[in-house]
Amino acid sequence: MKRLLSVAAGAVLAVAGLAGTSAASSGGVAGTSAALPSSVAIAAAPVGCDSGNLCFWNGENYTGAGPGELSGRNSNWGVFGQSACPNGTWSDCASSAYNNGVSCNAVMWTGTNYSGGFYRLSRGSGETQFASSHNNNFSSNSWISPSDTTTSACGGPNPFD
Picture 1 (cartoon, rainbow, N blue to C red):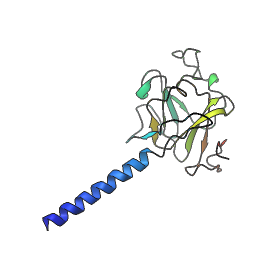
Picture 2 (cartoon, rainbow, N blue to C red):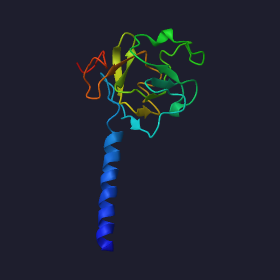
Picture 3 (cartoon, one colour):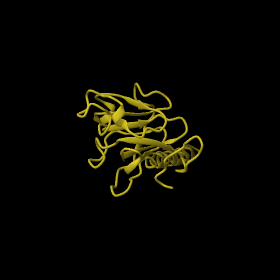
Picture 4 (cartoon, one colour):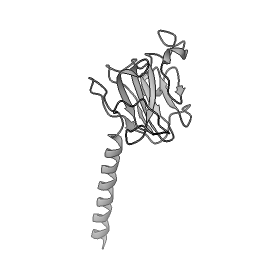
């Protein structure tokens, strides 16, 4: 009987490990030409990142100035001041980010007006360190559904359309 329980416990742990791997790999998606690492799901939103918001910091691992917090679509992060950033705004100043959205995936764009490359951050996941191709390189954001579609709640623009 002990052997049967031991085997069952091992199977449960193996399945739990696979589930964790799957969740961690479902976050970030590279846009246009750059390959990016997947975002990493974490247990809870970082301190200061309110529910419903895309949050970002100018340092890695949710450190430094921030969080900058945005809800809804924002076509130009240059209108949001941040004195700790080189150009005095959040445009081109995010080194880590967390999507604490309620129902949508966040899409961060390298250009204003939802242009250039993009990075999708699944709801409830974060990126503690962007690859050099995207570090300090985001200038707008939009929202899409968890299935990467545009819906009334997650109105895009959608890079997958």
